[in-house]
Length: 109
Length: 126
Length: 147
Image (tube, rainbow over all chains, first blue to last red):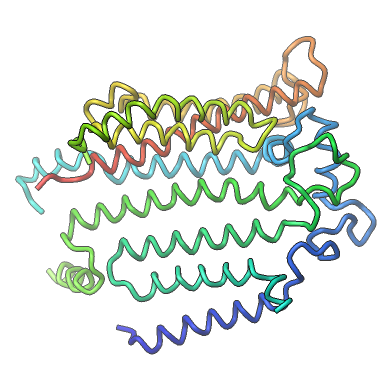
């Protein structure tokens, strides 16, 4: 329905917008970027700095990513497990007993 | 040239984003559109993880030679954590999309976009 | 997707490789504390070993490994392990939901209680992810109509 010219314009417009946005990002790995700061404006440590410093002292586990996933942010991980399990349940509801139903209808569609 | 060397990860991410969008817009088969969506998702995950790197920092697993008080020695662990679950959730979402496609094939016997639109219009008329 | 692949080379390769992939998946789950890994990655590897056998030898033969009636209860058990640890810490220990210092294991210091809590959770996550990925393949193979 939409002609090809409109689709090309949308694609090039999206690429231009993303390129203009990425031009303004700081250099990759810069230590002064806002991503890598150690204290917030008010003087308390940022979450990343707190997690790196206190992960081994509180859980005796060398892997910082597992401690953040399983201890500091464990309710978020509970939500993710529920999402994955719900996807499995949706497929059970969509795709069961198709041959039985079509045999009862007399081979329709 | 120096600007490109400092930011080449962002340029490649933009390229893969455009390839995924091209697949979603310009291909007429429904399976190819879903594959374009999954390419787009992989590019977004790669962008997030590349934002977390630090110059001179290592993987966020504690090593005995770099003490944890020196925070500049380890990368930011938060984007890695969030993208870990995003990958598995993405696989589950693609599974549901393909299940819907199996149902469409069983009902309408076609997976092209134009023929599918006409078949839905005919089906809703009677 | 229900018939086997009809090639003896593929069948021999899959039968030789699948137990090692399953063992490596268990290694990745249980060593998530010391090296990159954990529950999600180990669950995906375990599902990959089961799916390799299903593609190579058909749905009927490889239901000896993991039958259709076991997959859904296994996913439910995985989610219940996760919830059960949280509720156990809340009701029997006296602290908040999913706060591992309240787990009722006698004679462990609070640091090792957190260590054990994270380990139990990773096992639950691995089971749930494995069950979901195998279930996606099984139900799609059920839904095809042979013409």
